[in-house]
Length: 172
Image 1 (cartoon, one colour):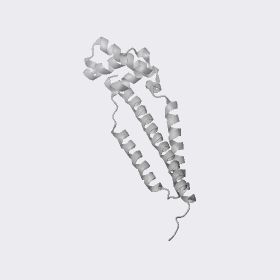
Image 2 (tube, one colour):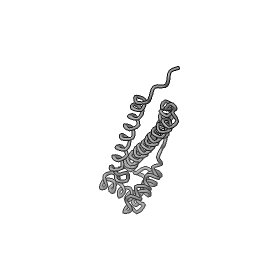
Image 3 (cartoon, helix red, strand yellow):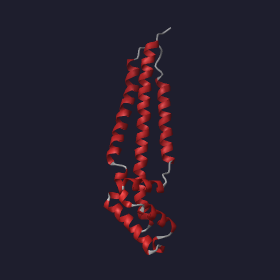
Image 4 (cartoon, one colour):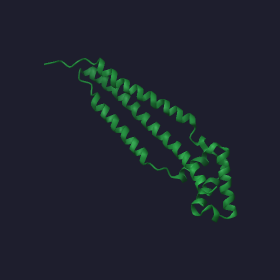
């Protein structure tokens, strides 16, 4: 039970944090795009002009790509992840941060008795608490996933149905 164990647990939490952030950001972009789409429908009907669906769709797609690329490049600092875990589990009493720092300084075999005891306590806490999964509750991931699917479905439905019902442009 050496350094990779605590790092592995922290990386699992970091992955859940990354997914939550990605789902939240995409959901917010798509809901904003949906609002803009219906605003432009209303404005186009009020002015009698064309609906700028292509431009709006391109903008929403570009924003989504930016979020995906930014999310792929984002690296979460494992120390900040450890701090989030400790905020969620105050009974750790900074043992996780101490264990993480100690493992980064020296290999587990080189650790003294006290350092090894702190590392073991942190690893035991991770096992007892399902690898600290509740730092990012599954309910949040499910909620953002559901919102993500609904927002995307509504956005796609808007871009499919609005052009079908839009009056044809007058021919000269």
